[in-house]
Length: 298
Ligand SMILES: [Cu+2]
Image (cartoon, rainbow, N blue to C red; front, top):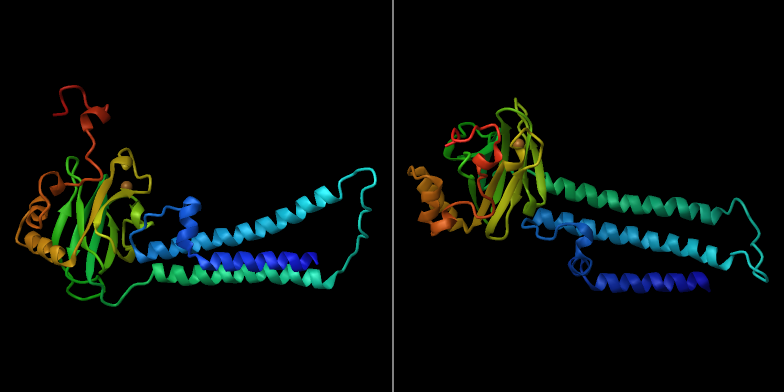
C-alpha cells in the first residue's frame, strides 16, 4: 500500500511539473540561484538544464529525507513502540533498484549536459559576424573582421579600442551568429558578459579561443574581465550593444568611413550619453590610483 501511495504521489508530481515549463518553476523559486536574464538561446538552454537538474536533485532529496524521517519517527525508542523489523541481507530487488536508478539519473544528466555543452561550443562554417576580441592590461579592443580566421584573406575592417577614459562599446546585430575570436596581448584575461551567461578565457600566444553566440534581445549589456589579471582587473569593463541588423550595418558603414565609435553610434540614432557606454563607466584614476602624487595625475 505504501509503495502504491508513494508512486501515486510521484506520478502526480510529474504531471504537475510537466504541466508547467522550466520557466514557470524558475520564476517561482528565483531560478534556484541561477541568473535569469539570459539574452542568448544558449543561455536559456543552460538555464533550463539547471532548473530541471535542481528539480531532479530535490526529488531524490525529498525521497531520501522522507525515508530517513519516517524511520527516525516510527522506530524511535519508546514504551510500547513497534519492534525493529527483522534485519535482512541480500535483498536482490532493492539492490538492483539502488544500482540501476542512480545510473539512470546520471545517464539522463550526462545526456543533456553533453547535448547542451556541444551546442554552446558549436561553431558554424559561416558566421554572420566575426569579432576579434583583443584583451590587454587593462582594456579591450574589438576588431570587426571581414571573415573568420579560418578563411584566407580575413582582415580587420573596423576597430574599437578602450582607453582609461573610454569604455569600448561593441555593437552587434540581434538574431545573427556572432563569432568571437579571442587573443590577449599580455596575460590571461577572460571575456565575460553576465547576460550571455557565458565567459571564456582570453589567452596570450598562439592559443585563440573561439566561441559563437546569438543575441536575441536588443539592449546594452555590461562586459567584464573575469580572470584576475593585475591591479586594474576590476576596471577592465566593456559594453555589448545589441541593435537591429539594419542599424548594425549602418554602424559598420559609419565605422568603415572613418568615424569614431561614439560618432558611428550617433549616426544610428544614439545621441547624448547613449553615444557612450551606459552600463559601466571609466573609473576616476585620480581617486583610485594612489600612486599618482597629487597634482601630477592631470
Ligand atoms: Cu583582465
